[in-house]
Image (cartoon, rainbow, N blue to C red; front, side, top):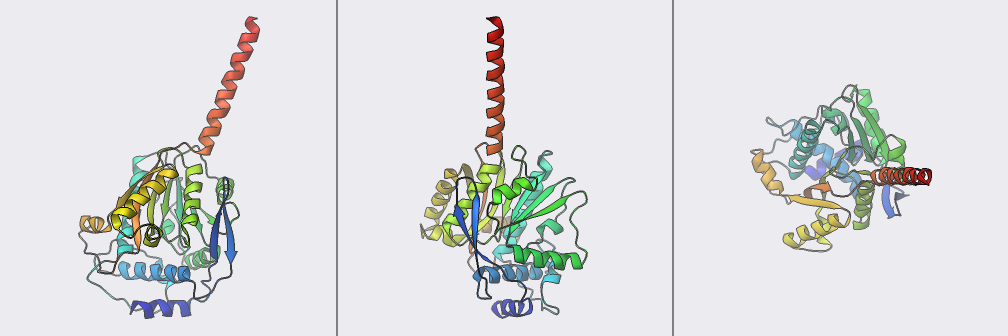
Length: 315
């Protein structure tokens, strides 16, 4: 039934065309080469599938979250199927929501949120953000623009005194675009990854490189990544978790892999029997950002120059 429902979504939303993005690693940037899109694009189907799951979860008697805007993204008269068990995607969505809001409550200086999404995510609109929060959405341009227009048409707005800025996944230099749009590498930030098209391990490592360059020490990266990324290296779950730790550490992160079943139990929910296709994680950045290093380099240089001038005067 779900497959038929997703197929109907594809037929009814033909403008949701999205570019394949191949991330290419460079010294300090994340470069993207766009390819032509088509309805057979698996990432396109994944975005539509996520919309459907949020729509169904919102209509449960006891939903993990409420998405008041998702209805405008599905066809009219889309049937609601109330299932006994909760889909892993919905548990992950609630987990990410909670972690984002908790971090913002706990740190007054935290005013930068970066969402790495499929372009159809409504988190920027449905969550209540603290005043003056800057929200950056990195996602495929065409899906984001289409979804944003639909949301504007129904009057959706983000929290008052907050600002939402889009960064196209197809940008030639995502790091540079983020900085031009106001991201400050000397201030705290939190990053959430859910739904962003990742086609290769290299593309994910490029994302880690961008986050590591921009996020100050202590910043959090939370979210989920496709299981197949780890399965390319290890088939057993224990091996996959060890691989995750080594991968994140190479980019300056201490990662904790989160068991989705544990999260579901903490929420008094039973997971559906289908195997989760993603791995949930929370990672803390252990390095200083590029901007922090540059600030300290300039301060050190200034101190040295002042010391030289004092020594010259003594002579």
